[in-house]
Length: 70
Image (cartoon, rainbow, N blue to C red; front, top):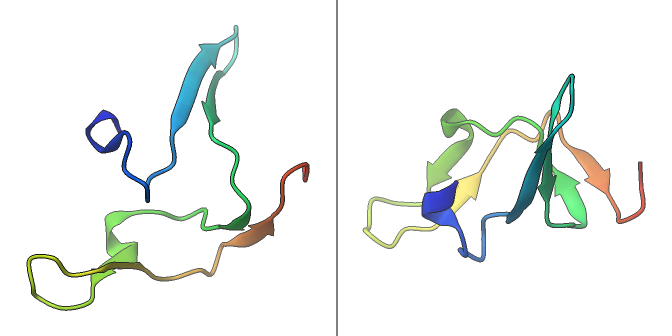
């Protein structure tokens, strides 16, 4: 993730905190659709050009999210 830090299309990680049982990753707050299944197979390039747009596919596990929703 450090390689992509600051890119406008990549969520920012604010910090990571560890307790006795878990590691908690704090990310920037976003509203919209939460994909929940991001992996390389779920990204496609629009064409073969060097500056091709990257599209996310397969929203089968996604949910709508608004700030304050738990």
